[in-house]
Image (cartoon, rainbow over all chains, first blue to last red; front, top):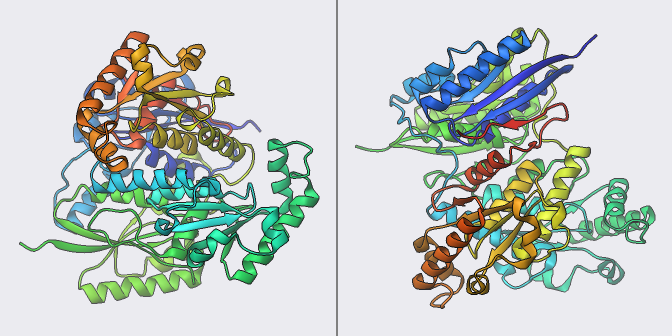
Amino acid sequence: MTTQKRTVIYISDGTGITVETLGRGMLTQFDGIEFHAIRYPFLDSLEKAAQCLEQINAINRREGIQPIVIMTVTHPEICALLHRGQAFFMDLFDTFIAPLEQELGSRHTRAVGRSHSQSGPQYDTRIAAINFTMAHDDGIADADLDYADLILVGVSRSGKTPTSLYLSMQFSLKAANYPLIPEDFERDQLPQRLLPYRDKLFGLTIAPEPLHRIREIRRPNSQYASLENCRHEVKAAEKMMRREGIKWFDTTSRSIEELAVQLMQELTVMAQSTPNDESLIVPSP
Amino acid sequence: MTTQKRTVIYISDGTGITVETLGRGMLTQFDGIEFHAIRYPFLDSLEKAAQCLEQINAINRREGIQPIVIMTVTHPEICALLHRGQAFFMDLFDTFIAPLEQELGSRHTRAVGRSHSQSGPQYDTRIAAINFTMAHDDGIADADLDYADLILVGVSRSGKTPTSLYLSMQFSLKAANYPLIPEDFERDQLPQRLLPYRDKLFGLTIAPEPLHRIREIRRPNSQYASLENCRHEVKAAEKMMRREGIKWFDTTSRSIEELAVQLMQELTVMAQSTPNDESLIVPSP
């Protein structure tokens, strides 16, 4: 049996990041089909739409099968022009906006690309969070930990840095991180500087085997990377976190996004959101 | 006229990040309505669905108007249970998956939460990109610039760090950044270390007024932050980039996401994507 191949075209009048993430989530549900993606971000003029339309029809002719078009475009004329193409359309905006207008008893404003905030206090908060997180990566700085929204602890390469960065970038949280190192395990105590912030500490852990693999890339054939040492550090870190009552998450089979949202559930803090939006993440039961 | 208030409930069997970004993009199209968000990530059992259903109906009773539910849930029974609630449903998965099955001539696999990759070579590439970007922030390290996918240059606080981090996090690009400082303008030359990498250089610039405001937060009343100095640095940086043929972007009214995608359009490189997916971003005409 040959694998089916299919071209997917993502079209957006904004960045197209959201529409692609959603589309990809749906397409990965279909096994045995090879999807080839083409992206048209910032498609915001009839001229660009006409070029894209040509491309859609060219693909249909060349491949002998119509491409899948996944799109969000606010402007009705641009939208209509694209729909003349020979394709299977998943038009997110078009599908939901009319029913939503009816439900809300209000007409939409046709403003393009409002999903990412660009300036103003929200944006400043986000940039401040990113800067804070960069400055408090890997225990570099321990000044200002008072201002941290949370502090991630864990052994080297357990996933603290990417998770902290994602929390700051996506949720505008001031996320510091601090390593647990062999000296801490010998003393069998949390790093002294973290003691005032016990209520802000969350742990990350990881299975020894993948940790070993990750550390080998960094320092091949070192004591640091040896499976035996990884086993020892992970065990010691988990023991310490258990004793200190630090809630921890296993990063072994979780994506950065999943870890970040689970930490948000723990915090049940205000997420970065529109100013009128008292945001709430409901913790899992 | 009183502002209309409306509760929005985001439900996902994954992180809910995508469904919320999409939902928020649509809701910001409606002026004069105050939306209050509640999030149910990782809703992946009938037990959690029953609790959520209760909450939906309680909100409907309390507010006297049905909440908006924006959801992606793959499991059909969980989905059906939620739909018993008194709400206005925007069910992304449910709306598109059946037509997509028909179009692809294939049944979907009902795998939950596949939109973020969790392990394997793609994930390693992403983590490696984040680590590279962290290590090459603000000209910290200039070893290994050979391996950079791109190097952002610009004056201090022009947006290099957040943009680099986003490029690594979202697109798995090794994005270094290097500051242009007053000494470079005095010599009227690019930093020596960047010369071998001219084809990887992209510039960021920013209007002097917002730059002044941002720098004032960092170092109030300094020469560094003065409007006069900001004007001088921006002008000198733009002159240098123009002369050196470095394409640059103005970050003044662009979000991190927009900048990142525009840089991707410039690179027209392979985006992080499924392994079978030869990705292409079509550059703007």
